[in-house]
Amino acid sequence: MSKYYVNKFLYTIDRDPDWVGRYKEDPRGTIEAWEQQVGRWLNPAQETTWLSFTEEEREALATHNYVWLFEHGAHFFLNLTLFIAL
Amino acid sequence: MADLTAVLASTHHPFYYKATTSPEQERPPFADQWQRKVEAYRETLTAAEPEILVMVGADHFHQLWLDNYPQFLIGQAERYDATFYNEEREFGIPKYTLDGDVDFSRYMHSELMAADFDFAVSHELKIDHSIICPIITVRPEADLPVAPIYTNIFVPPLPSPKRFYDLGRAIRRIIDAYPTDRKVAAIGTGHLSLELGGPRQFGEHGPDPLFDADAIEWLSTGNAEAILANVTHESMSGAGNATHGFMDLLLMMGIAGEGVHADYVDQLDLFHTREMYITWYPHKNQKQTDAAASAAEVSRASLGPIYANDPVWDPFRHPETGAGAPSESPVGA
Image (cartoon, rainbow over all chains, first blue to last red; front, top):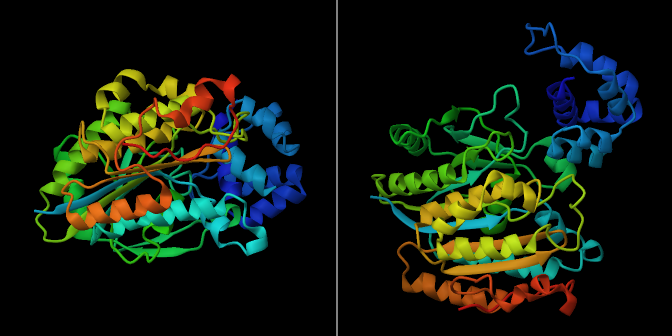
């Protein structure tokens, strides 16, 4: 479980119009791309050794299930603004 | 020493700009009254003739993030860009660039540290809507240098209500002691009861009108004792999941002073929130007195506190006798 990683996903998707578009069109594929290109990185050179989604989190994000995300502690503001955009 | 000519505490509503600048056929039905009230409120700042603005707000995960989130932060830059992509997308808020005042920010930072408020600092701060909303509402010319202060109302554990109040008191002392002949105004925004992204968000009124009734009385009478006795992080959560922005209003009341009655108090029951507009004049002069009176004629604001026993709150205390009717502003004392 990483509530932080879910919030990092919402935060970094919501701030970038390109990622918002990709997540809207292809949520499951975008999650994988995001993990490789964004999620794993603290900065351009430093990579996490441990952050990841649980299967439930991955499924909720892949199905745009904002109710599940809210109920499981995703930050309300991030959850609200991104899913309004979608 | 600096002349603190006005202290403003208001809610910020990111849709104000869109609601009041949309083409006539797209304007929501409440836009006219809202705009009338906001433009009247603006006159209370104009009459204070400010030359520097201390702006208190909170970054909504636009620049500050969970990998490194400060409790309190001051900007110390020559200029500040404002409005993030997702705020333009979501709210239709335009981009701004505000001048900073590095010497003033540096002074405030040093004095805050000396007063045991361990502030973080940012030399590249992009301002979000917590500070741009009040620029739009009360200083749309965006022509004055700002010293932006951010507080944490978003990432628990939050500083205590007392800490916010004490910070307000310290900011007041620090502004008063600043060696300048320029006039300073302090403007801060936050929230009354508010729910965002949760099940109580889209009610006909804000999620807890009776909290709002108490909050407006406490703020407009400078009643720190009542706030600190009654308001906790838990009680704010009970009033709505984003109610913690109330602590920024409490901070502004701290700048105005304990027991100091507000000189202009207005409120508006808007779809799913209650808006509030308060001004204190620490050294009220005739021009300010006249401006507040003239503004209140337009907005139907009160020229003093609005108490929780004002009839405006009756529909919420006695719902069987007519709750749900949109309430007019009370004409207070």
